[in-house]
Length: 113
Length: 114
Image (cartoon, rainbow over all chains, first blue to last red; front, side, top):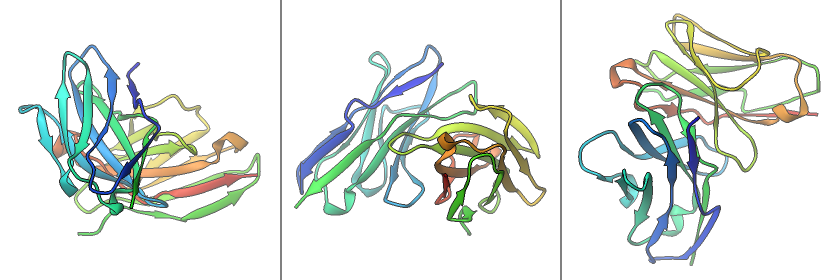
């Protein structure tokens, strides 16, 4: 079965500093990759997705992620975070042969003023 | 364009009871998926419905069942509730024209089982 690992459960970072949230997955088939953000008491909002093509994908709110097939990783980055980026971030994977999304356990990003 | 809506927002039940959660898909979408998100965990796929039939299921027992209606609204039914069923239940709608590649999530229903 597919598994998604988010290596950091909590990431504190100062405002305007860069941040990287790590995600690794296990799959022997081609996958589609996603990052979602969840604010308190809300559902999930799509930040960005990788389907094919360029391995560097840009999303909303200044986030970007890079797909690395050899390392089976899809790390999320932002060069300068804001207080409003404080939220829970989830990495998700879907195999191209199925319709099920597999989610990681999430990374709680806290931006410190 | 309306988003995905879910009702109720919160629900408290006791062990052994049955519960029905409702979801209204985003306009133009024809698939709906349900996820269970336990506290501190990522969402876990329960099942997906397409053309009013179950179209894939995760590792959940048969007491979790669903319905999709012609207007693309959906229900999640859980029988014989257990304490571990306490979670946030998320509904996500999507479109087959998008190749199942994107799902739009509702705000969720918080179920507490006592």
